[in-house]
Image (tube, rainbow, N blue to C red):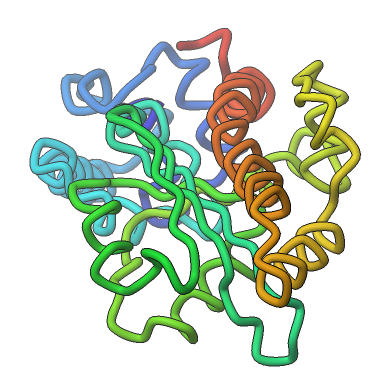
Length: 253
C-alpha cells in the first residue's frame, strides 16, 4: 500500500491523491515514468519525483521511521503490509495504581509469543530482546497508554519504530469501543474462562497473585493478556484490509 500513496508528497491530500489514481497513475513507479501527472507544472513534478525517489530509498532500506515522517499522523497503517512479517504486537496490564506499574505484558511476533511477568522475567533487557528486529509496533490504544506507561516503567527501552495503533485505525472505519467489543463485532471469539474479563478483572487477578500467590489467578491473567495481544494480529489484518478498501482507493490498486 505504501508505494501506492501520494500523500507522502507536500500538498497532496486524499482528494488530489484520488485524482492521480483516476488519471491512471497508480503507484510511485507510474508517477516517475509519467511525463505529466494531473497538470502538475514541470518544476513541481520534478520536486515530487525527488521526494518519491527518496521514499523509495527509505523503503529499500526498510527505514519505516523516515517513511512515517513523510506521512501525516495516524497514517502509519499504510506501512503495515510491507512490514507485517516483522510486526511486534504488544499489550500490557498494570496494577491500576496512580503510577501504573506494569504487571504483565505480552509481545507476539511471527517467530513466537512471549509473556513477561513482574517479579519473574519482566525487565528492560527482556523487553528489548523480545522486540529485537521488529519494524513496526501494533497495539490497541498503545499511543496513549501502553507506550507511555512502558517508557515510564522502563526508561531504557527503545520503542521508536512505526506504530500502528488499531484504536485509531478502527475509528477510521466506524469501529468504536474497546478491544473486546470490537473483537465480538469481528467474530473473534475468546475462550470461555476469559471471555468476560476486562481490565478491572486483570487488576484483581494481579492483586490475588501478589498477596496470596494464587497460581490460578496468575494463569488467568497471563491467558487474558496473551489473548489481548495475539488477537491484535487478526484485528490488524481485518482493519488494514478495510482501510485499503475505504480510504486508499482499493479499486485503483
